[in-house]
Image (cartoon, each protein chain N blue to C red):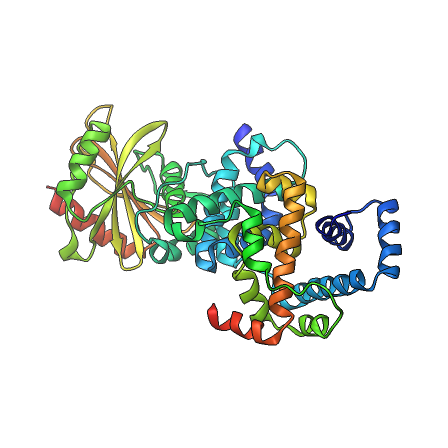
Length: 186
Length: 254
């Protein structure tokens, strides 16, 4: 029976990746309750579209749907959160003007000591289109190719956004004063 | 190689995305260039901090149960509805019931229970609870709900207001029972919801006004024959509460 086959497939493809789906949705929407709504809706969509999944990475496939659902949700409920910087170079000029970049110093030690609150604040402060790539890589552990598939961007763009996200986090966490500010501004 | 490309190469190396020859070249540069090494140290410190310092999200049992229920046998797939208000709280209790019950599908039907397809009605009720919003039209006013059914389905079942009896009307939705679109009125009882499905009678008029009870998957279903419709009320409220609802409804609808 086609319907039962569809359900079996859903159970195989979707259910193992619920935690990753939830984490992506939470980092995009900002709250667990909203993330649960998004994941639920995404899973209903995934269920309807399960026949369209033809191999490849099930996780990337599901996260693509979660991401699209989260963006629809944001458009409807948090339109301000969607003011994203499409022009990466403008973003870079604005955000990284103060990045010292070079000499070895105590920054690596400071970064290593960053606690959960600092890290959360620093990630949350990233612009949405940079945050999603960082989360897909560092939290969900996707490869570059999988990330490119999820966000439908060329790998080169994925790489540069990931690199810039990390630079921004390093700049924030590399000085304890900045990190403390990050917590307050959240 | 530009500074930008250097950064990308470092990131790709840290992420294990470089092939062997590129990785070898980069390792040689790391050994020879302190600036690059310093940048790489910060990068690895950041990655280690993210790995150990950011707690991983874990889907709650409730969420997992809801999603798992999508693939439970016996439930028809249904498209999500647009949420118009926050239904979560109200749906939560019923969703937990759905979770606990999703294992069994045994149908314990009252003797000789005639009328509508019980398991289909229960499945629709559960499906509606899983959707973001179980209502297609949200109104506590029967004068809104009844015309809505009329316009939508060209069917006009009795819609009564039972607020005084403790079962306020929440709205209505369209269900699919045995392949036909039928109206369902939604009432609330505390944090639970009661779906009352009205299936237009096609066969001979039946005067067997006796209500028949059935339970399935933890839901109680009470069905009876009305003037032009067969009715079935389904909910996870206590059976005596559902009985009180049915009695109040039938009294008001007369």
